Amino acid sequence: MEFPAKMKAIRKHERLTQQEICELLEISISTWKKYEAAIIEMGLPPIMKICNHPRLKKYTLWLMTGDTAPDCGQISPL
Image (cartoon, rainbow, N blue to C red; front, side, top):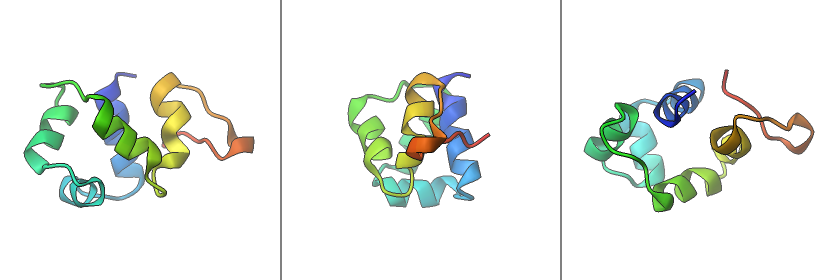
């Protein structure tokens, strides 16, 4: 699964609108829409916001590698 599709899957699994996830991560809505549409690639700073956010941290391993580790609390939104 491509990175933009993973971002959308996480957002939908958390039942967040694009606007809500942008507010949560302090990212502009126009930038987020470009990430999800694969118009621009997400750089390290926004990736770190996702990976370090308490609500989204559980998806870090899956987001970065496609793997999960349920014993460690690392899950997939799928």
